[in-house]
Length: 334
Image (cartoon, rainbow, N blue to C red; front, side):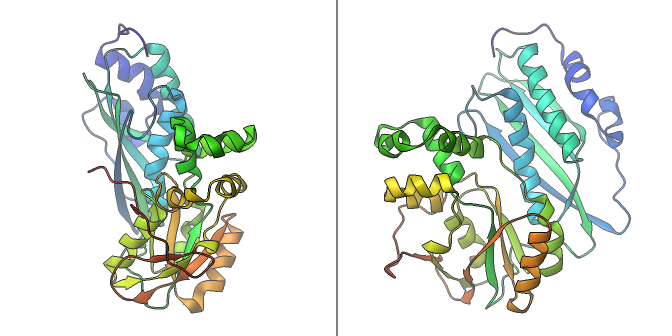
């Protein structure tokens, strides 16, 4: 972003964001949106705040930044088995924004809003002396009493996770290029490096899992701050714990090859953020049906272990049967 563009706030909204507005957004000509909840459904709301230099790199492609801002919220809706209805956008722009940058941002945002059927409903745009900051509030709908809570884990529940874990954390390390990581970074193929970078840049919200979650899961949440820490949060709310064998954690080929070169990466894989996969707890009697429903939806799921009554965080056990010790279990802002 370079040089202040000659747009008023009204011009900016009319030019870049009004074309993205859904019917409830009233073409962004009012101070609020007006929406009717779908009949027989309840609304689910979630908000994520993304800051340049914390959640993304300021030189990332503007369309990718926009997509990530929306997708991390859609991931929360997916974990609650909610269908997207729309979103509100808060955008704090630094002084050096340009019309070209904002057009690319709006294009990426509009493409995802259309693909995920989640139109813009309104928001606010301001100038800031600080870094670029993006706030998205996503709204979803789910059949009454069918939202899947975080705290519903029961003893004996099978714990599943979608997709693969640790790719985004390794992608971030690639972007940072720390000297300590040059052994495994240098050993990666271009294809593996590109895959890991993309997993950090563009989350894949697992919205197709909604039916399986509604039908079979006691509890669910998305993995945003790290598998170990987020699993601990979900279990702790229900007075549960678990023992997880490291061999059960699903890894991509790229992550597996990086780990073979540098076994120390297991902590980053288990505790790094930005996976945006879904953790869920399913009763044993429904496990096979859940797996079948997930497969029918095109979502891969892996069985990590089982919940058991107890205090303390889940333990992660290596191939020798020894519990590994982690310096941290998840990303923390404070």
